[in-house]
Amino acid sequence: MAVSVVLFTRDLRLRDNPPLREALAAADTVVPLFVRDDAISAAGYAVPNRRAFLADCLADLDRQLRERGSRLVVRTGDVVEQVCRVAHEAGAAEVHMSADVSAYAARREERLAAALESAGRRLRVHDRVITAVAPGEITPAGKDHMAVFTPYFRRWEKDHQRDVLGAPRRAPGVEEVRGEEIPTRAAVRGVSPGVPAGGETAGRKRFADWRRSGMDTYEEQHDDLAGDATSRLSPHLHFGTLSPVELVARAREKGGPGAGAFVRQLAWRDFHHQVLCARPRSGHAEYRTRQDRWRTEEEAPEEVAAWKRGATGFPVIDAALRQLRHEGWMHNRGRLLVGSFLTKTLYIDWRVGARHFLDLLVDGDMANNQMNWQWVAGTGTDTRPNRVLNPITQAKKYDPQGDYVRRWVPQLAQLAGRTVHEPWKLDDQRRAALDYPERIVDLAAASGRFLRARGK
Image (cartoon, rainbow, N blue to C red):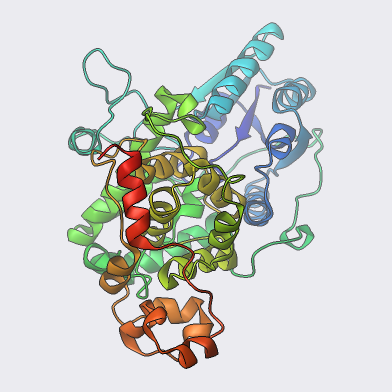
């Protein structure tokens, strides 16, 4: 009786899961496996918000597998060691997994392939699972990736997407292979109070609801901070409880400007993945080298601390950072604003902000987080690396009535309309009564510092 192992990583779903479907087609029984990776924990990436969401994902995946005659085997330790051990216990000839793009994922795949081969087994790696289009499939002549989004998107749009796969009706398992208890969210300490429920079931409901009631207005409303019209699907895409291939297909089926704008955002996600795949060092080192030098956290500890707390004295910046701490998520326009403020107004190393985001974001991954931070810092793929987003101008444009600020900065709730964006313009008595911090930087002085550093 042929047996295969399916190693789940960032593809925690049954629907549209090529590794699972191929394993079932090639074997009589499968061992669905998830390894709680010691290396990820040791590197500080297994933070409470993602651990809580992951626990939901694993519980939901296990429940669905049990309905189909199997169960999820969870192990903890070194991925290569645990996969080889499970393959040996099950007598499996093949291990199936999804391709990923980080430097760590590439090393993991190489180690696992070598270890399995030495034991007479085979690793089969599947593309177009974590991304809609695989990194390396769209490249210019003589190069390994595309560095500008617009030409990438033109070619991405013309790509022939693979068919969306349904969930298997049956997934016969191997009872002899034992695992640990499925982790629970309740066992995770330090979780932000607003972290949403994880799992394929929750993700599919979220997408179905938003596709029906929010997708049509996405193009004109996705930058509206107070309106909160984004899909909020990024945590589900990060953990793979939703398939990017299926999301593209379902959006195109619906059609319209909103669906088109949403598909473009999925293409941005693929774009960042192909950049990181080709330039794995850009997860930590600058994609484009600059001549000037960032300030470090050690050189500006008070400013960095105020930024992290959401106490900069600039209401829209503070609102976004407080939303992050409460929900483990931040509106995309907020991400741009707080990133520009840290790197170009405070002139602090983008890696400080990227690490803070990874400490709190449920959707934090190396490709999107690191490459978006480099984009806004001017060291990534942005074709206008010297652009600076003025927090006051942006706040008045994307939170015109101040509702987003009042939602997250209750000290300013009594201020009406646009007044909330510039509390320093109030008289001394009213300002003192707010219990809200003064601005930590003068925008004009900061702009001058930035331009001097860039040699402008």
